[in-house]
Image: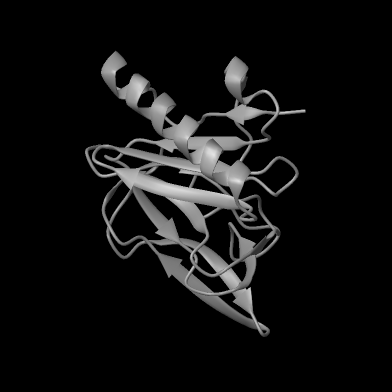
Length: 163
């Protein structure tokens, strides 16, 4: 069964949506012809990630019907506004939103953060590493659940610098 997923803020103009759909179709075709499990491409003001169904997704997103031409090709796509800045995991480890199980999370979605402000902790080899914001703005999305494992360069947060 094929699934198409799209998350993130809606495109500013319908033209952007058409470009995202076309790019998603092309990436799905490439994915279907290869042994890759995912493809991510940024083109101009559009960023699209296509991933085979069954592979772990970054975050839950609303399900939209796949185009008829792609019904046999499993895919998951995340379109992200280019205005958002992604904060990635600098290491492999376990993601924690707070300094301890009883403490409040460092940040919530919608919070305004400053450059250098601690967003989370990644535990690696029994060391707690504070992950700081690389830009000031508003936390648009938190992409990882508390206590889940993260990989190197995995997106953790989306920050809107315009807020």
